[in-house]
Image (cartoon, rainbow, N blue to C red):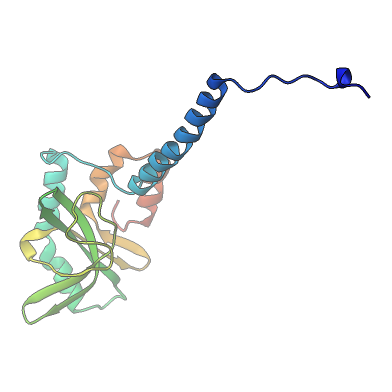
Length: 174
């Protein structure tokens, strides 16, 4: 066989190398941005002065004595008590759910139950003291239904219809 029967290949050009390098550089960037989006999926940002959220927090705070009454005297199988707590540091304010609630010696304690997005001084699993002034919502389960969670209703306007329906089915009072 002579070499005339072999297909000829031209060597890759500098442009071809540049394209491959660009593609290989972009793929990790895309993966980083996708992972950051996925980390933020559970977080819905609301403006600090949102009137509906302010009203929901006021309603939750006004009904906090009801939460404590049930917490102290669980007569109907109530469980999964949680408080939403506003935490502020130099990066801003973020509201976290705290579970494993305990009240001893005049202090309320809880365990941070979601990842931080803005605030850096707490993280998932941290056990914290919860000042009553920092509580922005509360919830517990009764007969398989969620009671409280007033701030969730405000977030409905930012959720898909299927998400809203799923949450409403979980709530004792949607």
